Length: 380
Image (cartoon, rainbow, N blue to C red; front, side, top):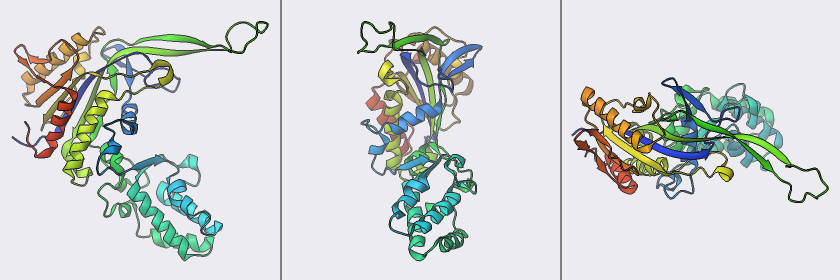
């Protein structure tokens, strides 16, 4: 069979009395779908928690071949200019600071507020720091530094930072992409596409009134609480969906299939086991996937979100059945022939038709199967 081009991962996660992802007003993010208001978790929130789970046994940072990256408005300040301070004249360092800020962030980047939050990989920053060091060592004053950077920049762009580096933007950019407004040629296409998760049922939320009491308050002091506040808590069974473009991932990993397979393996674990969530100390919003369905195939991906266009009760067994019904409808209509495996904590079997059930695996085995889709290209 042909090599699979895409892995599609569908999940159901349940959380109780949590505030997983807040909007600008401090309330839970929401989405109206099928004329029903749902609770939502943004894709940015999900990706950040997967990226930052560096203590997890399956952290991306623990992969052999991992390359670090940094997302900040102060990449030049901290990674390029800071090593020069105290070693070269102050006026030279200040001139290089301004010049390199503009080279990286654009002409209006003289202040932190005017810069975009940019993602650069460690290889790019090491190269850039070496260029700044070279110029600093060759000049004696600010005017000389400015002139040297102007000359240097004539034939330099972001692409120059990428030469001889398999993962110039780091593994984070290789997975989730990046956009550089000052140099579109430096953009990296994301091979991992992540949808916003939403509840399969109507939003379930209530205000949580809470107080803080002064433990040292005397009997004669004013009564009542020292602090009175209110927040929002939600409950929900969330449908999540992401797609991995396998050729795109391998390409972004410099053709390294072993690293790419490791990424898929660890990402499956992270998606299933790492929870998004604010207010960790007061809500402990930790949960694992109640269902994870993985599809491997060569046709354009398609979400199963339409299984929940009409909101259903907050019920895992019902949600699993709905996913199976939607799969059956797509199979009958399109016959795209994806290979599938899944894990589930539900008693309901995931079926694509009245007589066809799928192979049910543990997370360990499921992640290994997903990783094998990169290996030799077979679609087992």
